[in-house]
Image (cartoon, rainbow over all chains, first blue to last red):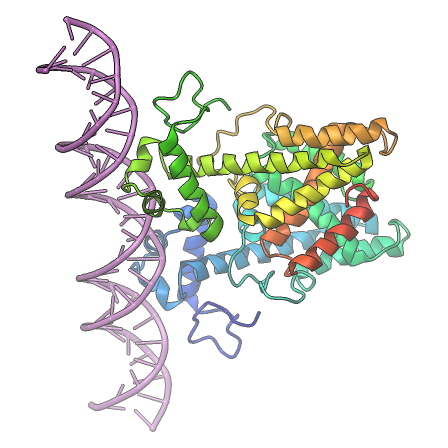
Length: 211
Length: 211
DNA sequence: GTCGTGATGTTTACATCGTAAACAAACGCC
DNA sequence: GGCGTTTGTTTACGATGTAAACATCACGAC
């Protein structure tokens, strides 16, 4: 959990901090290619070309391609969390939970590659998964956010009582199941049909809040 | 849905039929490597070595590495369906549905790479933008099997009435969500803890049958 | 028999990939 | 100034997917 793969030799005590403008430029290039053309297109040479440096330059900032992809993923998580927080603008607990679900779906459908990178494959050194024992998802900011929204509803009597963490995980798994099957093209639906399907499934299982 | 990528030049009218002993040998080699070491280890050269042929031999039977992986995946689906059918041995509708859930989980946990290959890949957006409209999962034998188990329960009054297809999809998504998060190492749990978690989540959401 | 003909397999070759190694310029600090 | 550290480049190597050309072998027609 503590080791960043980014080299950031001039970063201060906290290596998770900015690694300098050059690292930024390289991550930006990698992200641009990734979003446009997918993970396979993110080759070190392509990134270097886009960042206007030589192919080996990226290795001064990232141990390996995998470490670079991890940085790309972290940007995705940042954006995801920011998006979730928009749901706080809704007026009441139930509305906030519903908005959270909508924000989740919107992010996944607008950033399918980011979503897949973040949640549908195992990446070494993932912030969500230490791959070893112990709590990881329980601590993830986005998961805590969902737990809070559910606790809020429970406190307002809008939810059957129970362990909010368990309910949050259940809801997360449910939405993630739908989303990931859709993104993996196992459902053969277009986006509007999929959104309608989500609405029906989630309202069936969770009443109104989940949809 | 009808075009096989396998070349099978001596296969009869149905190209999905056996492509000859050599194709078998190559798929077997690919599967062995895949199960042991993961998709990345399935290189054409490694497969050829294992199948005791020259590196280019596989191209006589499969268009590309991707087509070979697809054949590997189909083997996985066959095994998966066979496993599901064991659940029919249970005595009553509720028991059969519960056994189906258990079979699903068991298959995924015993064959994690197969499961990931079958259900956690191919993200919308890139070359796979074919996204051929129309029913696909609705026709899949394994999905029909789940719908049948749910219909059985509904007929016996063990399930709230409703569209069995929708309920089946909801249950599928829920279990798949849990499984895929676990396999992608987002939960940071070991297997026994994960099984216990599934039990709690699914029994919370679906009463007894799902667990 | 001989002679195509097509299925099957091999060898060779190439572009592209991740990345190790050696080298060079730019910077801070004395 | 000199010198070590940081940052970048060039070059090179082994692995990969696969195209192209060539070799083998079975088999039906003559």
